[in-house]
Length: 332
Ligand code: NAP
Ligand code: GDD
Image 1 (cartoon, rainbow, N blue to C red):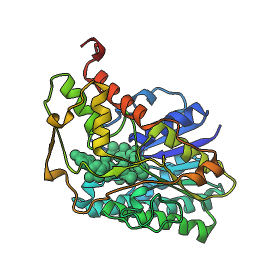
Image 2 (image 1 turned 90 degrees about the horizontal axis):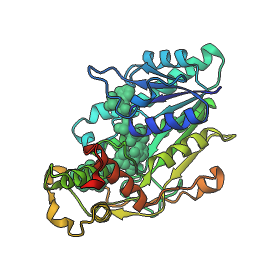
Image 3 (image 1 turned 120 degrees about the vertical axis):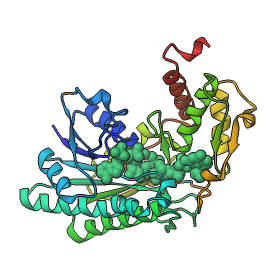
């Protein structure tokens, strides 16, 4: 059986990737960091699986990463751990840079040391992002589009992207960067705009709130479905040679269009009266539009997105309606 190590396993992508790799008969080791209260909302269902194991490590502590490698002896490492919320990267820029940027260097150094000590080879996936394109200089963006990050988060991921490529070229490591555009699911963190909206709609339907407070409604994002996207991560590491790939749907939608679709699921057309705007949720520098061209992934990996925008929104809203009403919202 193949073995995989996933950092950030309790996050949205980490938990979906763990599900996928277990289905593919891997032994999966999921890295979580120490916390006083464990956050296993997305991974509670994995706790009793025979081939799944939690390990404790931290991207800010290289020895713990090395130990995680020794304990799991992985064929593949998926580095998904990050301070992933763009908005917070202005509040905690050093921590964001340490975890997202230098954390990747620590992991690469730990892998080099592990490969040297054990004479084993490890394939490495780095979670790069469409935030690298930021103020897009080409639309849609491809693997050849120049980067222009617009946040401390984007800049931290730029370092991570280039150090991963540099170690591939310097040390012949099997390192891949997936430049993933926004992807969402029922397991998305509650601060991100899609989940904030799906949860807000559910609260309004259940009479728990009468509005959602948001920031910029005109930004556009290329939104896909996370379970589709984690498959691309796995595909990258199954190729004969390491490379970088854009993963996207090629469509872009405004936050307003997401609101249209989300309120439509519950039969509300005049959502404007349920939405307030607050400058607190505006960003010092905004990424106005993102749209990607995943042709290379289509031809070289055979990857295409399976879930369209309407279905993504419907899945998220219905999941939040059900979460807030265990009796079943359809009865209301
Ligand atoms: P997420 O839900 O925020 O998950 C990130 C995980 O990283 C969390 O489990 C978090 O643990 C963990 N983490 C944070 N700091 C850590 C540290 N110092 N040591 C160890 N673990 C740490 O993010 P996601 O949406 O699944 O995204 C996964 C990765 O893909 C991230 O690197 C993100 O930047 C990148 N990405 C995401 C998207 C997207 O649209 N979702 C697009 C492109 C790239 P705690 O729970 O303890 O905080
Ligand atoms: N979070 C949030 N909350 N965003 C809002 C709000 C709000 O109340 N109102 C408007 N927005 C706008 C943001 O200004 C941004 O333009 C857009 O909604 C999306 O914000 P997020 O959902 O927070 O995601 P993101 O695009 O900034 O970042 C996500 O995608 C990146 C890939 O492009 C994250 O998953 C990153 O980790 C990822 O790299």
